[in-house]
Image (tube, rainbow, N blue to C red; front, side, top):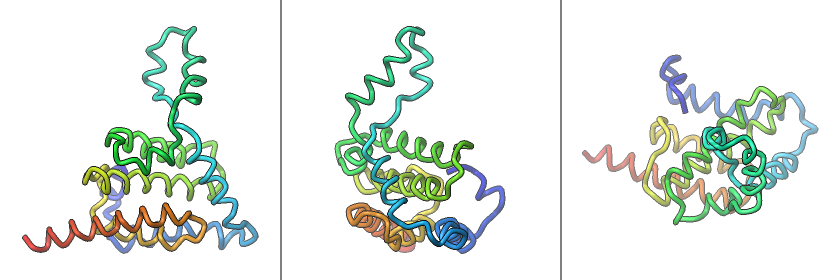
Amino acid sequence: MDNNSEIFELTREQKTRLFDLGFKKEQAENPHISDSEKTDLLLDLLAIPLPVDPSQVSDLPDILRPLCQELTSISGEPLAKLLFDSNVDVSAFQQIKDYAKDFGTSTSLKSDISRDVALTIYYAAIASALIFHDSKITKNSYEDLVHSFESLCKQEWISKDLIRHFEKARQQCNKKLNAEEGK
């Protein structure tokens, strides 16, 4: 993530509480909104390819820029396939994480549903990097990640495959924590 948690000097419990509040806020404010809307948006986003990096597009001649997005949507792999592929490079998981972060913090988003789904994809990218490459692509501690993955595993609107993915990542983080304690 960014340095905000360090700036505000939040404890692990405070971070976990904020994370949980974010997921539960929408239900408290709008109880008629069903989890199926989150599931639908998550499935929609996981079915699209990773958007082209804007910095790469800006280097192209003006005439090619519109074509770049079209070609990517035809040839790019869906996010879901990338997140569950052990052959995908860590840099791609970092790009997915950054995409989800940008999507979740977009000023055009007014929906807590969108924010929750973005957080889910954000943590799915972190989980993939941990599981497939033993690489931590976040500044969050392993302890914080364990709590975040545990919280995500409790969300009924998240697919079973993704929950298993979060559970594997949680176990990976616990191994890292146990190894650190053994030193």
